[in-house]
Amino acid sequence: MQENMKLAVNHMVSDAIARARMSLVNPTMGLDAKRSSAWCEYGFKQDLTFEDLYKLFRRGGIAFGGVTKLVGNCWKTSPQVIEGDKADKYKKETAWEASFKKYVNKRIWKAFKEADQKRLVGRYAGLILHINDSGKWHEPVTKSKLLKKATPAWANAIKPTDWVTDINSPNYGQPSMWQYTETLPNGGTRNINIHPDRIFILGDYSVDAIGFLEPAYNAFVSLEKVEGGSGESFLKNAARQLNINYEKEASLDEMARMYGVDIAGLQEIYNEVAREINAGNDSVLVTKGANVSPMVTAVSDPTPTYNVNLQTASAAMDIPSKILVGMQTGERASTEDQKYFNSRCQSRRESELSFEIEDFIDHLINIKVLDPIGEKTVIWDDLNEQSSTEKLDSAEKMSRINQTALATSEPVFSVEEIREAAGHKNDSEELLGETDEDTEDKDGDKTRNES
Image (cartoon, rainbow, N blue to C red):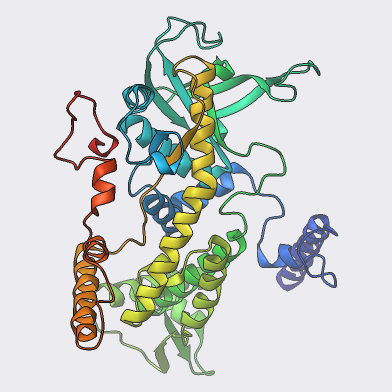
């Protein structure tokens, strides 16, 4: 009777699992046209929500490292915004630039950096602007006032609620109101309607936007399985589960009567013995006609499987795996990876962040925090720029080449070129701009190099 009940339960469970799998089968799930339920079997989600990406960032070490390393390197230094183009970099600081640095200070750049990190996790992020104009959050900015601070907001905390429906409006199709879910110190929340004048969005909030972590999500799921599975295997071996194998002539009923329990109680007695054996340093297990052996399984090396998924995640985020996990197999290899990563961050600075910063400045101009300007340029320093020691080494090599060339011809490099290679400005650059010590010219005007 008991055996039939087990068979019936097993059949019901198998049938439930089969029906659950069939209900999850989606013809669009996965890339395997032959096996449409492949992703379901692998544990990969078809659609990712903000909560999925946030949990991955919060609890996944590789994902957290990928986001923070990219943001940290891109924002290693704050950008410089000048009036004009790059050719005007060494000219005197203009009145507009002085006003810009007054409103967009280091704290604003810090908030912009935090919003950039939140955007990489959740596809987009909000930068809530605290304008000192005595206006309500849901009201437009009416007059020029000070930008006091900016508050970064996660994508799940800032959502559009209304849209511009006037087809003749220049903002047609754009949000006309945002709702910000503020988390209170006591753990509660409150909803605040915010006018678009008082918020700036980084990233893409459209329904078909692709987040930074999305292409690597499946690889992170597999990484979690490898890490958790191998850890569980080591734990089970370390727990020393015991297998007690009695000879076939032994009677479990007689042993149970000897202990004064039934067959079910005999199992608990042996469990208690196993716990005492594992907990004590000097413990004895007395058996009669039984063999006791630990239940140990061979744990395979997770490294090859782990590395395959790590490389997939690295490719998806475009971050070298050695940079991602801090592994170095050789000085040259790690140096080349660092140069590539610096170039990748430099490209992101100039092709993505610079345009968003320009849009941010235009937004501040539209709400009259900043005065209008004809042309502006966002300038970043070079992440692959040589260090002071490397510059001096280059200058020394150039001097040696000159000494060798003097025996047969004229010097190959001029004094100005050697000085520039050593990290010093040449005479023409010094005429365009002052050094850091010379912060004011004869008329008392500040220069850009002061910043």
